Image (cartoon, rainbow, N blue to C red; front, side, top):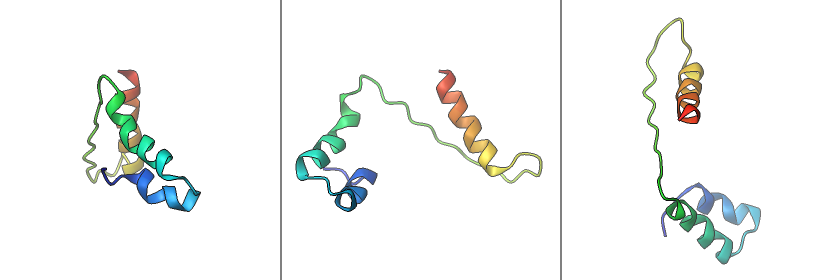
Length: 62
């Protein structure tokens, strides 16, 4: 099983082992997984959060 956010949060939310296993396997059911990497640069006119949101918008536009 891979360590991911759902495995860290699951015990706090009271999820059982079956729900944790399902969450860990769910990304692998997709026919394609798109990964986005954002490299934010210090720039006075464009804040860091705007750079991250712009990357998110680019993915949604795909």
